[in-house]
Image 1 (cartoon, rainbow, N blue to C red):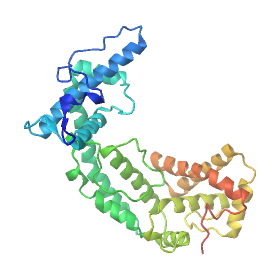
Image 2 (cartoon, helix red, strand yellow; image 1 turned 180 degrees about the vertical axis):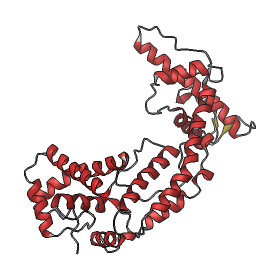
Image 3 (cartoon, one colour; image 1 turned 90 degrees about the horizontal axis):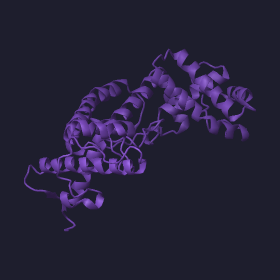
Image 4 (cartoon, one colour; image 1 turned 180 degrees about the horizontal axis):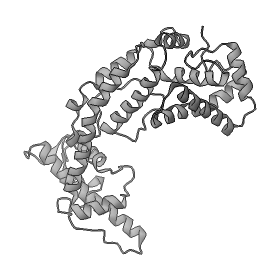
Length: 327
């Protein structure tokens, strides 16, 4: 086969059976109920058959019926998109029982169309999420954040759910304190990213922007030029202020405050240390009147993840690698 083109009917090297063009509606796995291995193999073949039927139609739509072949790169993109839309993991060919039942009951094309509609609904949410994030972004310098939000401007107009739903037509450079799992793709990744960024930005809005700037400049004088998450050092210092008995909104920790933190955490077992940090995060949220469950869990998770760093810092007799001292 020509390396520059790929016949969908000839893509059986990726697992398509010869009957890829036949209708699968109403067919079910043929293995007996007592043979789990055969049943699993039959389910895999059944879903592959459905997937290749969907892919054949996608190719016809993409080429507007003019060709049954297309460049290999585009064929892989269409296949990856169909897998994402239908919830099929290319790295784990074993399909879920629910997907098998849906295909058997409705037919692969109907299942695919319903899944595309779900993706389109998610894409419709993106613009409002992006707008909320922009309106809630604190006036702190960050080239990476500014460029990321600008890249996400108009995302729905560039996103193509029907053919390339797994792709993200944007450059996302700004890091989150809690990264989005790489298992998420396409609009699911973008919306999860924006939802987490919105939590971070709303948390930062609880503090005086001048104090946040001074804290971040203590992290690095040119913090705005770095690919640096703005939320994490502020949230960590807020947790530290609770542990030190300082004003949470002040965000300021001095040598005496760090000494009180060390005294309160010294000798704690790893689990107990994480619990103390998480309890301090709960106290921060209570002080700031953060009542959203997802936001509280986000701050609590960050605090718990500080535990290994705090344990190392306590052994080294210096907490400056965890909490920022500034004046």
